[in-house]
Image (tube, helix red, strand yellow):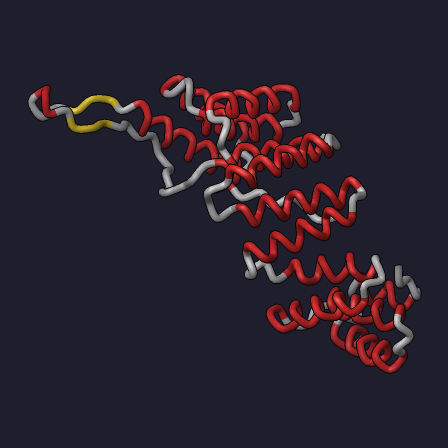
Length: 260
């Protein structure tokens, strides 16, 4: 099963790398050139610090910075989104959901929050709610991450057993971002399972054109060759698999005649 696409820019847009405590001020002409504290900018830096700590699994530091950010900006939807992800990471799911809902209550048209919340719901096996969140994210999306949302919707549909929806969403993800060439291989696997061999071959060709030959792509060629009774093709790809990737899991599948 594929993993969800989790990109920290979906949680919060990082524009700079911050590694130290920083006091944020801004010009205040009315006070003779003196400066005053800028809570919005300070909160933004605290969230950037928190995201950096989350990337490094420094959970206590992440929470500390998020709490400080909320002191500066208690009605900032972005902070609650990242806080929701923090609680999700530490397996406090009720608190995570509360934070996601708080974020959406403050900004009901935030595609990033709906996307992260949808992935959270899917992990809880709340598939219909997750799809609703993903579709809402897609509807209100005005940023380039829509392909990631489609991919997560596809992953969730696949997890729930709804293969037709998964296929449709994967295709949409690839259409919105053709650089996601690895999805051609994902699509090929599904299409072989659905016995749509012509389309599977087309996706395999596209994958290898952009990404080259891999153990997995050769294995899918073997599967489709076996399913369509093309023994010469099967032998060709099997020889390549055993020669180039002899210790791979896919080679073991072939040797065990495990084509499903």
